[in-house]
Amino acid sequence: MGWDYDTQCKECGAKIRVTERPMGVPGGKEKEQAYCPKCNALVAEHMTDGFIDARLIQDESEE
Image (cartoon, rainbow, N blue to C red):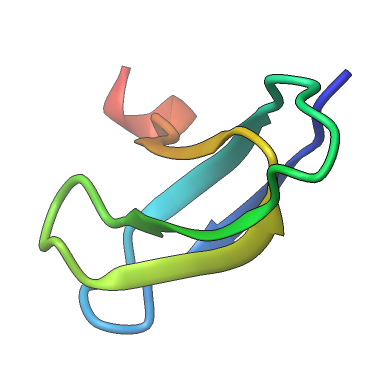
C-alpha cells in the first residue's frame, strides 16, 4: 500500500495531493519526482520502488 499527502506548490500556490504507487520490487528503489500539474514546479521527491504522482485538489469554492 502506498502513501499520500497534501501539500502546496511553492511557486504558484496550487493545492496538490502527492500519491505513491508502489510496485513492490525488492531492491528497486530510485529517487522519483512529482511536478505541479499547474506550473510544472518540483513539489515532491522521494526514494521509492514505484512512482509518485501529483494532482490538483479542487477547492470547494471552485466547484
